[in-house]
Length: 238
Image 1 (cartoon, helix red, strand yellow):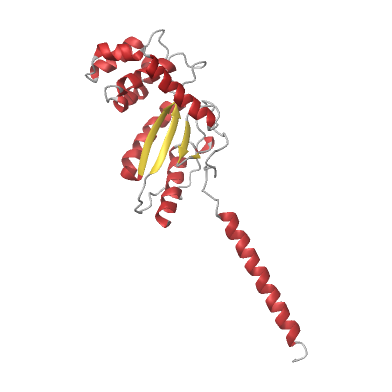
Image 2 (tube, one colour):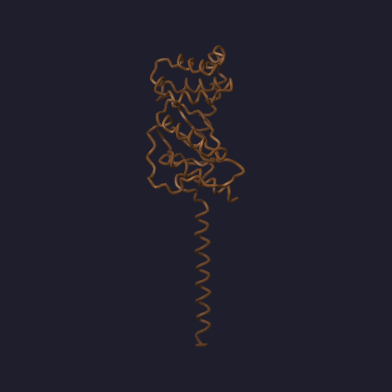
């Protein structure tokens, strides 16, 4: 038995080395896993693409329960949207629900990405939202535009409807009308479009969670919650 002892020790050592190597490799590969739907890049590749309705998520509820964690900074949910885009209109109430559900754990940011060649009134709607921003009512106008999308989307001239929204919000109508046509607002919208294009955005809705693009097939209520939960848990662990 003593004669075979050196060989046994060599085999044990070799097996230990192989085990350590395999564990290290597995750990290294899993470090970039951001969960279903998220791309692992600060300059993500485009996977959203067009204005077709988002694909339904799997029926499994795993990972959908909001984690009970405390984080020092919220998950930033950035949408590149078009007010006339039907899938954006469908996603709007889901984002509002998530904002209500997660509270200060998320921060919702909207960027204009009107697809003017496809949606004739999308640019005018973006101008209406920005004109309302000049009177500190951006989100109120944003909500009305999405909630009432079918009311103005097919009109030859939607501006009278937008003026009625401004009136409901008690805005200064003369200023609102003037701002709707201003070059300054046009430049703001153009800046959003250029920024989105530089990140690979080509269609709406496109969502980023903390700079990670959400894949288009996951751009729905379940996909958003899964992605947010993954990032909240990561923030809590750092």
